[in-house]
Amino acid sequence: MVDMKGTQLIHEYLRHNKKFPHVFCAGCGHGIVLGSLIRSIHGLGLSKDEVCVVAGIGCSGRLAAYVDFNTVHTTHGRALTFATGIKMAKPGMHVIVVMGDGDSMAIGGNHLIHAARRNIGVTALILNNNIYGMTGGQCSPTTPSGSFSMTTPMGQMEQSFDCVELCSAAKANYVARGTVFHVKKLDKMIMDGISNPGFGVVEILTPCHTQYGRKNKYKTPVDMYKTLKKDVIDIDRYNKLSEADKAKKVPSGVFVQKDEPGLEEKFYEMAANCQGGL
Amino acid sequence: MSVKRKGNSTVTIFPDWCKGCGICAAFCPAKVMELNDQGKAVVIREDECINCGFCELHCPDFAIMVRPKVDDEIPAVCRAVLEKAARKTDRPAASGGAAEKAGSGKKKE
Image 1 (cartoon, rainbow over the protein chains, first blue to last red):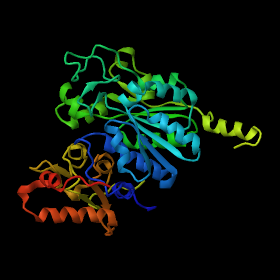
Image 2 (image 1 turned 180 degrees about the vertical axis):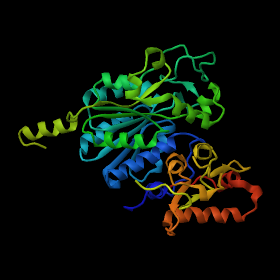
Image 3 (image 1 turned 90 degrees about the vertical axis):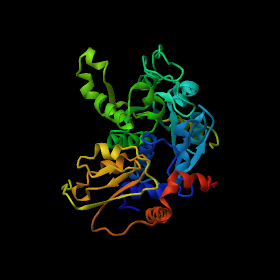
Image 4 (image 1 turned 90 degrees about the horizontal axis):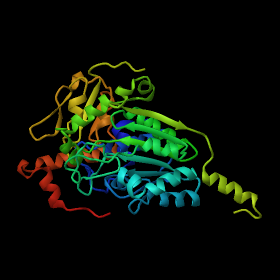
């Protein structure tokens, strides 16, 4: 398995007794994220038993079913809480949480900021497709203002969440933003996020053509990928732009990188110092 | 850094797994793939492939495999997928992939 790469490698990690092709729509970026996650775990040299993938509800929740790691499919918005429990009980396990934008920032928004504050050593992949894809295209906290969805047929009037700024302000250890178009950068971000000791957040911009693109003047899934290619630029280039240009672009890259120990490390150290230990 | 030469790689598409999103055909720098009349990707100019790996990385359905031409051995899991696809294409074309899948029902693990 060592010299394998690309699709051959991914096929080794899939559960072939599940129904393939997977449930995601044609052109959905979630499949690319799944491939990226598998390549990152292979690249870090972790065995299948050392990894636990926790997923919530939503399109992204299906992702955990297809990979041959320890996987948990949890209730809506509570993926991070399940992951916290797993990480505290088994600190040696690499816990990766896969959430959508609604899952992480709407119903699970509370858990996201507190997981970041606690700095628990799990890695959260937030698959941000700007919409509630699975339930029929309702607007989510990250739907950009002015864009259309099923529940905002005249355009979204509210502001949208910026996941990166939210997690940076909540003091997560590692915060990055990638896209499914820039896959090699995404691989590196996920690898860094997993190997970082504390709470790691990787926001991944992934297009949802079926629910978001159709209502927002993207004719094909390919148009959405072209937009990602055009609009998402590196953080260094973004900082050099003028204020007027900044409004049109989205920065990607690593925003926060710290080396603070995670909660589980501190907890086991405290337990060892107490009488008897654990 | 490997030299990107034309004609040194084979491109295999698993027809069963392809959903026809068109990402590979739209972004391939050498225009190796095209969508056929059924909306699925097909390899038409394999000799032009420069082995950049874009399609393999960006296929959301893991349906494309790019290998060096000398390497003849396909791993067992990938071979199983290809064989299954070959068996299906022997049947009448009118049934189509979607109809067949609906008939087979969902497998429970």
